[in-house]
Image (cartoon, rainbow, N blue to C red; front, top):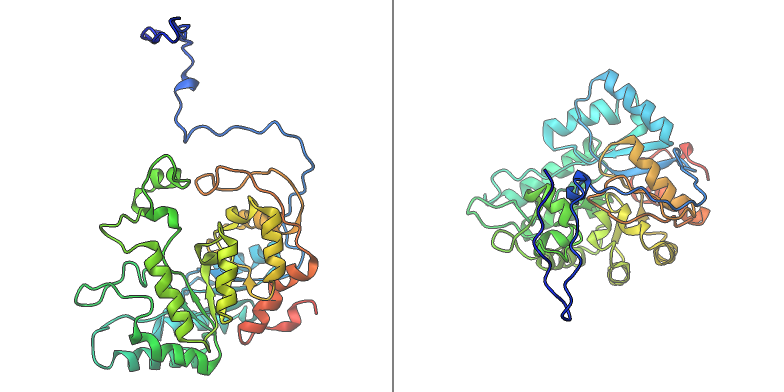
Length: 369
């Protein structure tokens, strides 16, 4: 049965032409279903293997991975030219030791690096600052090569009184002093994309993601503002100038690289990485290329999630000059990607040279000079 339309209102004294029903169900599809195929024909240069061996400084793997799964993981890494993976989910104490034994001291010792994590138990105890610092030092001595701080720190995690733990909470100062003393980096993920904190309306460019995953929204009645957490993070960086901080996900400033560069100028101990923010770079190829060249000594390759085919998009954006090609996840980018065609020396620094300088214990012999 066809659809029934009301008579359109008159404009300028003339009735509008009535839209006749077509019966075509495709006209009733949702925005989620709309995935147009581009008719543009331009040169294509897909890349399935990185030009240089690289270090992925932002990944998460099971520390107790069985041997056969570890073999498969390394085989997939080889296909991508991924030489060293940093597993940020090391934990602390006994869990950290098991992860280090399995991944960083096992069959593939040269292929994996493990970062430790904070233990937040009994955080309000008088000895907590000393205890968390001592545990971190023990974990680093056992084989961890850095510290990873997850996004719940500063956003969701609370103390025993129900108070939000601030990013610059002084209870962790002694732990950061351990990182400075042992010269290991801290990779920190603070907050979420700023759009998650904004109203879910027609102007929010992450609307589709928030519609599909409503729990990712950060409404003001439950969370501090994005600016509040960023300010806390930057105060913490400045408070510990001898600690090398890797600000995850371009510090959620991939859409404002000028501001990110300004912060990096202000804080020489702040580095960054590109995990899960490729979509921001691929829509501004000219300015992003200039930015990478200027800050080429301060940026690392990171991916975050382990899906081997997704790395191909990273390689293509970073290495080629291709135009107008698809991104792998529409809810992150309803726009198309463009290649930055980074100079070889910038690529080398992004892929491995910067990691060799900052992360202790990497096998430099596996990389070109």
